[in-house]
Image (cartoon, rainbow, N blue to C red):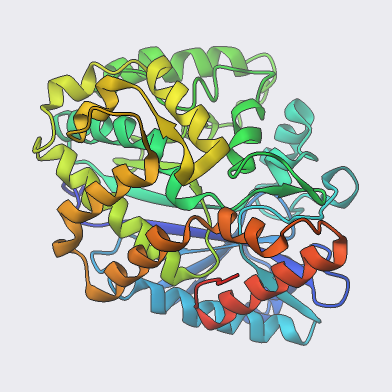
Length: 406
C-alpha cells in the first residue's frame, strides 16, 4: 500500500528496562514478552500499538501497528501501553526508564544482545562493529516514518527533511550523561551515532543524507557504496541495504517512506508526540515552499548542514546559528540561538496543532530540552545517588505521562 505525503505516519519509541532496586539495565525483554504473550516473539500486536525488541535485551520498542492517520491521540495510546508494560514488569521488580541514554550504564560489561529472532543479524553486527559500546547498546530514540508516493513526492520530502534535520536535536536532546559524567554534549547519543560505524563509514555518511532526490540516484550514491563496503563482512548476504543505511534520515524504498532517526526519546509520550507533530507541520511548511522554493532547499550540501548539526548536538536549543544563508530561510539575518528559529516556526504552524500539543511545545520553549532540565536538576552533584534520584523522577514522568520539571 502506497500513501501520499503526510497522509499517514509511523512512530517508534524505545525504552530501557531497569531493575527497580539496583537501577541497572535489566535484559529481560524476552520475559516481558512471555508475560504478555505466553511465548517469545520479536513483535507483539497490542491493538493499535506493537511491542518489539531490537538488538539488545534490555530495550523494548513501542510503535504504531502499521501506518496511522491519527496523530492527536497517539500520546494517550502510547501512555496506556507504557502503563501496561510497567504493570507486567512490576512483578519482576523492573520498570521502564525514558531518555536516550542510561546515565550510569557500563556497556562493556552490561550489554546483552537479543538472543532470539534476528539474532544472526545482530551477531554479525556485533562481529563487525562490537556492539558493546554506548552507540549500540545505550541509545534510545524516537523514529518518525513519513510516506512518499513516487519520485516526485520523494524529491520534495527528502529536500525538506534534509534541511530541517540539523536543528531537530535542539528540541529532542535527552542524553547529556554517560557513565556518571557530563559528556559536554546535550545530545551524546548523536555524538556516538556519528562514529558508531567508523569501520564502514559508507553506512552513516555525514548523518545528513546526500543531495539525492530520486530512487535511481539514491541507489547509486548511497546504497551501492554501502553494499560494496559490507560485502567482505557479510559473506552470507543476510544484511539488507535499508537496514544498513544509518544516516539521520533514511529512505525506505521497500515501504515508500523516509524514516527520521536523529530524535532522542523524551520523558513521556506527551513530549514525544508534541515534538513529532511540530516537526511534521514544519516539514509541510517547507514542502509547500512558503519559506523557500524546493530548488533552493535542494542546493544545500550535506557538509554545510552537517556543520550546523554538529554544533546543535553539543548545545541543543542554546546553539548559536551564524550561517547567514540558513538564517535567511527563516527570515533572519543576525546570529541567533536555535530556540528562536523553533519559536518562529512554531508561530507559523501552531494553528494546525491541537491545543494540548501547542501547550506542550510552549512548555519546551520555556523550559528547554530534556537534557537542559536533567542537568539543571543534577546541578554540580554527579554522585550516583543524585543521578539516580533525578532519573527515577524521569521514570515517574513516563509512568504518569507528565513533563519533567527540575
